[in-house]
Image (tube, rainbow, N blue to C red; front, side, top):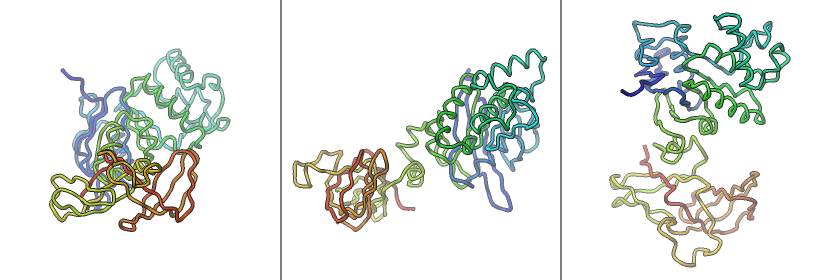
Length: 359
């Protein structure tokens, strides 16, 4: 018999003022799994988290923990009975309590058991020497570690995290994320993390649930979400994109880079061919006149440099294409800053292109 999901939500909806904020959302998280609910601000992520935590009521749908119903529109386990830990942007540490007292706040065991659990968690998060310090004496990163230890102290089966790293500076953020992930995995906790940052979701998640306008539009492993987006908006959420427009004729679309297959798309349909800037390359050797390109490269197309900027690890070069006057961006490793007006030939990775009908 298969193990039930640690957390399962089924067909959750929630409306405010007649507007459907959460629209038929379903997902599951297994023990030890990190799932990221990813999407732009206002798409319903935090409301979904609040419903799971029990601080917001759904209009319809149900929530299960380890296969047991904890909430529907009739039956409701109160928030404190759900074995769910919470971490938010505001660490909300009690200023009048020491670090150790903050971590021990939700524990109900004996004094010896509580002290042992507090020490164990403070050591795990690298704060063992700060047990007697107070929150105002800690940096933001240190406060985040204490908040994590406090949330984990009662051994919750599920951890809900709402943008918990947004208050940290860039220098600390990656280090704290990695440490948090290690601690959560060591505890075997099922984690649902809300974020609007694709990089954070890619770094932390075993599975990403991409949310838009109250709905989950795509779920999958980070690799699959990135490399097989469900539509143009999904591709654009993870990186800059180039969009090449065309019209289907005989299941083919004519572009500056040759014909693209559009199987199953009716003739006359407008399509968008999406490609990320890192998958355009400049054809320095051929100049458009050398040996025939391989099938994966298609036809070379000429563009005129409009601008070039050095971005640190790569250069971003923008081209105005001869074929249709469209603007395409190419991400070139290292330093490459051609002068505006320079003509160059471009090639694209056909296996990295996505073809979507225009909606």
